[in-house]
Length: 223
Length: 223
Image (cartoon, rainbow over all chains, first blue to last red; front, top):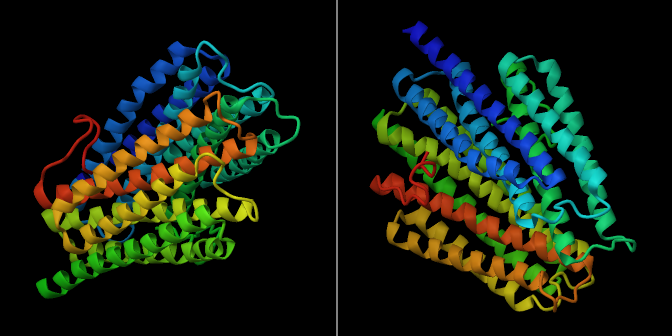
């Protein structure tokens, strides 16, 4: 019975890693399509988001099945409940990548990245891809040391996000309303992508150490 | 034992209704503060979001405790897992209300709603408040008939959301970059608020009927 259960938990972890890998591919393609106005690449991201959704649903069904059939307690229960939450966050990260790709597709054949923000969005995209890769490694290895990289990269994304608004609201901004809308939405999508990754990393750390790296000790709890 | 369990499930439902009531107050105050540039009201929403977060965390802890101690199966298990998901969505709805209030506070003493969009955002706000009230009733009564109201109102919010972008991207849009940014963000917050409510309603309907009102039969599953 324990062996079956142990296998089920390993299955959950494997599936989480697979979804994280799909999300990494998605954000890599999405940010590249956004940067280079590559509509074919954007179409791939948009179509493949369905696969991420399906895998998340399948993982959730497995988690519920484990709860029903194996009735885990203590740490094993927390692992399964955490998997449900991580799955939901990964699915939203896939949505953010899909939204970025949608922007690239909608503006085609015009440039998707507004003039004057190319460097900023290229960096944000690279950070998001790095975050996704590190997150995948974290889920695969449970090596908590690498979790710090995710938080640091998220801080960098937040700074770039703030700089987008600084630029867009400055006197020197020459973009028309369309460029302003795109910059606002794209920046938010990149920022939310990173936020979700941090949220996942915190839960993984808590599972591993019992330590909660709370931003707010009262409300920022690891459930 | 069954009695204790039954009481626990009722406790879960009561707590969900309480959080939904807090979210209703939050969106009502937030949209009013946004509409009238009432910074005191906005400050209340921002401060009170912490309470919504705390209540959601407490509910999640209770749900996990029920899973650990009572080890529910079948429908009872689905109720508890659904409660975890609904709690997360309600918490995000609270965040959306807080984001709307932040916009109102940041622009103060200037008007938060960009010129030419007052009617639109007033309507979106009223719809969101109505959606929150109906959602609270749904969670309280489990009366599935009222769930349709939520979906219809969400359709109306989506239409208004599209109209915001139409207006902002039209030749007649006279707003500067700041107004464009605010319109973009505010519209998205109102739209996401309604989306989360629909997501919750679908899960409640599924619990009640076993029927899933899927938008996409493959990926839009009730887990």
